[in-house]
Image (cartoon, rainbow, N blue to C red; front, side, top):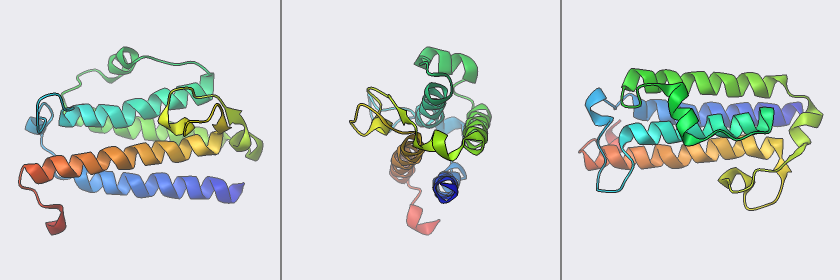
Length: 159
């Protein structure tokens, strides 16, 4: 299982490195912008990444769900880039600390995560799979942010 933990840590680090590249192209005035009506703002995408990670983390750690409103209370100013960057960092730090605290048995323990993509449609999944789902979720929204920047003329192939 030590190998499992190392693989999860590597996956989380890899996707965060990809997100960091995108974050280098964001500016404060992008936070309230979205490419079209009804789409999440840039800031909303960052909240979705860290907020969902926090929600899933609390389910794994405490067995309880927190609402989107509770996430926003913990966050503060949802349109401030520096606050959002700090939130991303704090949540990931908490995730990695929790991962480091788990035994091999804890990583294989089946967790019910009804209604979340991290459950991959199953009634229960091993805790290790939920961590992989966190990484997958971040990759998905990082891709959306790349598309957002591209629509603003920031070509990712030139990064």
